[in-house]
Length: 283
Image 1 (cartoon, rainbow, N blue to C red):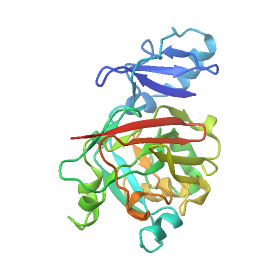
Image 2 (image 1 turned 45 degrees about the vertical axis):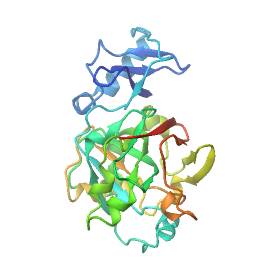
Image 3 (image 1 turned 180 degrees about the horizontal axis):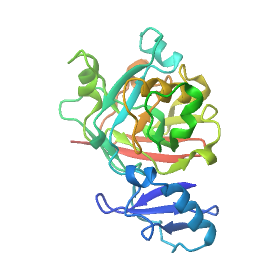
């Protein structure tokens, strides 16, 4: 299934897409698609209602699409998780996942404008596979247990301000948590529909020029390993988001470092997970 949220910021309606692309409102089942919804078996309830044909149709065309998960408790990010990206940035290939946190309030809709921070000269893009937790995960025994704790997947654009991130602090937070720096969606695609998360092509272009073109099979640490690993150090709760890293092709590693400017348009996609499109504006 493809779960989504339709409407203006703060007033999104939960919805689901049927097999033919028709959207159905979920307001009779839940007030939102969030942690409590996922923790209480919400996905199964939607699946049953969809099969019964009891959900009312809702129009999507011309309406804003919000992030498919409301108010994530946390956004956990994995850096340098593609060997080619580590190499292009001059970083060593990590022996353990590089983990950092991102302010959950950075999460916005997949087509919302992205604000270039004041004083920024190095705003960068990063297409990533996002994992959404559906069942609490703490001290998992091994990666084989991870699948039972994943609700589904989405596209994430882990925007970064490289000067803030790498030059202003020993930590990455300043360059990762600027407002609007995590477009998510358009859909939360459930795990059963995605299948193997390590076989998804992911792409990103800037102003029509392809910058990133890779596959999740090229991750250094795969999704199952990451969920298991993170559960050893923090409790992963329903609605939490994990950004799993980006492949080569970011501005930081390209000749001339073509960082983003107001008016630039970023478009990205992952197989089966839809597309995003953002226009950059000044904050």
